[in-house]
Length: 334
Image 1 (cartoon, rainbow, N blue to C red):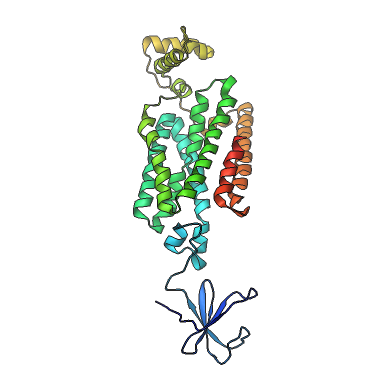
Image 2: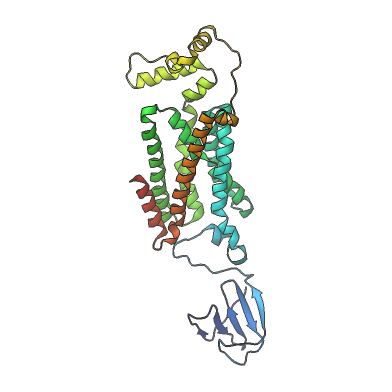
């Protein structure tokens, strides 16, 4: 290990390095990412125009632990030449959101919303624990993509499909309200747990109850109707009516007036003929549907752009990062 036995040290705010002199007379310039040895050690001043030999910090770095006890930056020395890796953490997370929304959104349409939701939750939980256990930088970025995985998009659609048109706006707003509360909890946990793997464990354990119970949640009515599983949809309607204390629940045929004969035939005769499978191209089936699709995309793009630009820049506001993040979550509730 490289030890510098200092005789005296000069420091000025106009220089980007610290000048030190060892007991043997060698003069060194110490930077954050390197150190340089002066070939001519006759003058101990900052003004020097002679030759120098540069060395990298091969013996590790000294970090300021005022705010954080341990992070992935201090754990894997993601500074200096490897600083770009630390800057990749947020882009890879958002890449996971994009990929997850595309892949699991399609899986939700093909194999059911509940299937995609359950797979996403289990995947997130297992990858988070694996990341803590292995703790390798080579696995961090792929697992960071998998942990994000566009979960909010699938859950948002799952909840709104269960909500009627009159209350759909109210329901979608309150989904993001819980998201805002989660941001406040994340800020609080980050303030209390200053070690990254302890922080990760706390957030993973918080999702454990949902991992154990998510398989109990039923499929959405709209997906069951598109698959022609009308009897299952009717059972769910009956359960919803019982919980809402409605003595006479509505019939599936009332929800599908244009397909009344088809619904009755399938429920009565158990017709098992295949239903038409839809894909993403159906979003542009005609100009009316395409216009709605593009409008929804623009709304999501604009809302996400405004939110993430505001929230991700909170670390540059000054003051406590934890307080800034907490206030952003509180602001989203207002």
